[in-house]
Image (cartoon, rainbow, N blue to C red; front, top):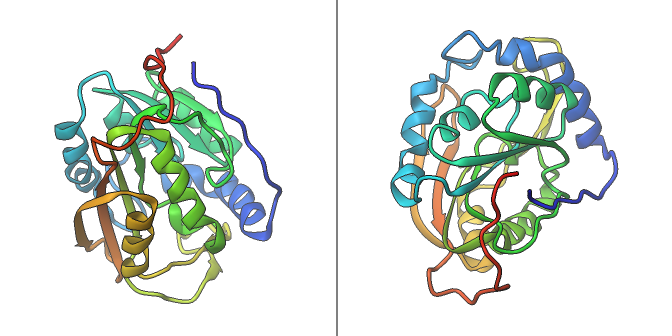
Length: 234
């Protein structure tokens, strides 16, 4: 079982996120629909995740950062990989454990959770980085690099433009949710500075302007940070 620790406190974005997702979870992901209130079809998520399936071996350890209730990404990934999901919301994690029983879920802040180096072969971070306080995103990307085995991949959605930060109820549930963006050029630079090779950057249309999808890899020849066997699920 993975050893994970969490640090940090309830900053305003964190407090908004915990309280907002407690109220918005069922509305945003009822568990019975194949799309969300933003009209993002879950087939789109399958398309985005396809390179992860192609690049990683079956049974690999994959981390879903900001997993929400586990639908659809943890659910899709768990059909092939051993999945660990992390989310700040107790409600989201409780629902994820019911909806995706094949995966393992931790209630923790994705910006402050810690894993040992070389714990995962893949990391997926879709539509969650925008909820992390801006000053904590670059350090989080650097930690993602350390958490991956050499040759491991990260798939992350980012902003493509820089709209102002906001706290709003854009999911239509009257729940306040914090979000902000850097531009895709900045994210690309942060990934490269952390050591990743950016394999692909794609603009995506989800009914809102300014979204980008990055697929990046920790070079296969990157130095090994520890010599230990791959962790197994217990």
